[in-house]
Length: 167
Length: 395
Image: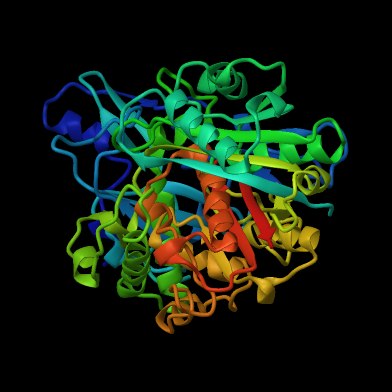
């Protein structure tokens, strides 16, 4: 399936303006996890002087090669990787999960190994992606997308979107 | 490693009873004391495995059970290590015995679980990894099980039928276990016709959550000998190791693994390292094992344990299953109790229950599910936050 057929992650606010609905404020579900403007990135932590990364930044672990305080700096993680594995949640997860649709529709979830950081990160896939579209090794990229909305807000989170071709 | 004796074991039947967990744990403790022939007033240490869904963490488990049995002045501790809590409680008891602080200890864990998915604590909790995974991704426990199962399919060619075969095998075992919650025998079609929960896993591939309680009375070898118990089941090894950095397998409840960009992952991953430690303590290896109780949170996870415990090479677990090696009557039966698929998970009791089953097996008391001639047994489990455990028992 071509990536263009998956839901676009960036046009939601303008789309609602086009249809005459009030423009909703775009806010992250949880602050400090990812960018909300410009290029989509997860916000991670990096050990000073080492290529060791953590996500999320505020719950970073440590590297046992460092004796003493872990000197962490904020870093934007790269946004391309390969699918490590994938699955679905066919039943609505319990709170604090908020379903995007009523009734609930199954979501597809991928664990993706970032090329640069060599770490696996979990996330939902954009709407329209099913397990049939994925394999271990599928190239994907990070986007910032709507997790759920209320009357005034679109609540944002990171999701994975397959990339055309196998680069 | 110096050994300790398992003098007595006890289990409250697993089910969805909806009663206070203290009741299950106390029943199990009394059965274990009776089985050991040990007077409660002689117990010098109480090691409780903690459940976290009962107000104060398991109402502070160790002292709760000690109070229910009647405070006897014993020393007390409580352990929390998610699914490995029971093994950690056993490890603490072993330390007390081998240090000489006490001769005989009671290890006990019990749980009362709510219906449906296990879920994080309530409230707005962005500093809690367990909350974040539900809030931001909808990553329930079966989601992690589904990731593991799908990767097995894509990498090793496992099929849904292979996974179903685990359930079929364990359900056959469970028919003979009066303590199990589910004792119906299923066939492959039953599993295939159950609804998908987390692709590729179906409802009957995934374990339920249950109420239950289990207990052990353990002692020094000298104490056992002085009581005329010359050939007790012995605990020869306990492993409760953490992962070694970088752990690159995504697991509960994390959103991300460690990064391997600076340091290559260790040759032996987390689960294999759990097994390595217990074999090293016992001075035994996979070839010595006669029977195993492993954590089949999902059917596909049981297959993974065959490889992690060294029963076969990576990618060959399905063949071991298909060849009947892990069925009762085979060379190395796995989950003769019926496993989690038949019990449902009662978190703080489960690792203790595994040792109870192996004790019955090594004593030749497992009746219709007996593994003939079993002398060495191993348990394995894994829980949230980098916890896992293995216990090796021998006769």
